[in-house]
Length: 123
Image (cartoon, rainbow, N blue to C red):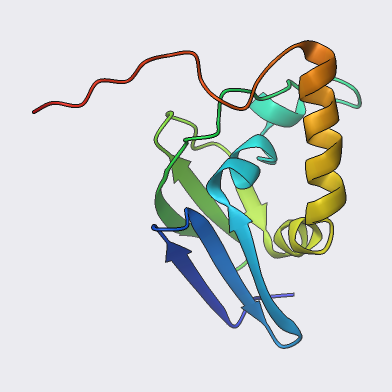
């Protein structure tokens, strides 16, 4: 379950995980909206919080959490999810169906992937 290699692809805004059976690319947005944190998943069944406006989120850094997980730090301030190896593989294996379900939830809630907040960069 542990990837042989982990690479951040800043241009494509993806995290590449290489396993013996192939390579997987998970977008930063996908990783953010499927964060395993209690803030996102809730504290019990059915208590999750729909994440929206995360289309342009960036992954700032990856920190190891012992030998069992990665802590991903995003530029929207989210840094509380520990992505253990089993969960990362679950995301890889189920990316398509999870993404379709997420898009349906967004539509049902009248929300969008894009943020309505305008960001200004210092000159």
